Image (cartoon, rainbow, N blue to C red):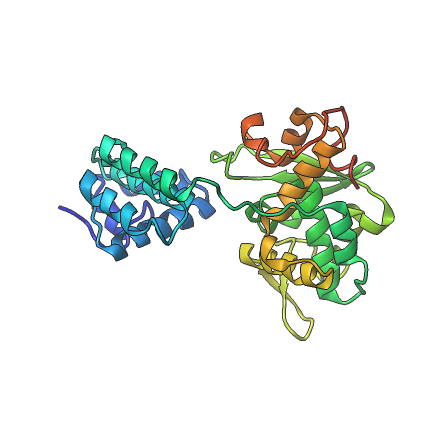
Length: 316
């Protein structure tokens, strides 16, 4: 029976679509995607159901859905929606119509008509960071924001990785900080990876910035980056991914930069681009950023030869 309305590998509606699945199996299905991916999946399906789509759907329905949104959404967004619709079919035990020639041809036509270029976040450079943090004081929010910006840049972190850090994931050693990412977009099974954050020059040292922020906290456990209210009170609650974008844009304005071209992803793109320009080999950059391949990393490397050196240490 077709399902309309919200549908997700986490939603009750989907549980009805998995034939005779035990509760523990549903839990494993739920755990097969990172939390951020789960939210994106639900959001994508919400768009489809709000338009009137169902699961299962026909190739014609999906093609009509894509065509209806071709003038208002980027091809990359439509492609992501298509992937989510396909996943919903597979989880529900249905053949996915998204691989049909009709759907493929519709997407090709949309790309040819409206272009396939995806707007990418403008990379933040070392000079940008200097301008953004140069006038910071010892106010809690500015201490936190400096740590957030410098750690985010030096680690080449996705914003979900950055705000997902706990103090227990960050260890101080002689060379700097060792940060453990428990789970990420390219590590769906939670194997984890460790990243070295070296000491930098005093003005832009991510290690010193983080230690200054940590010194303001009553407890050195729990979320590493926390919310702060307008009175300067530090909350025990974790900062959101959206807040990273807000921090970046707020301080872009301070630095007389155009805020609309920057986002939380600008820190990650900035490290990759700056390291490439400094001659850091691509494999070294990938070990810092966690990109799965050089092909994925190539989107952020604008120019520069590749030489041996720590990705963060070479540019800070």
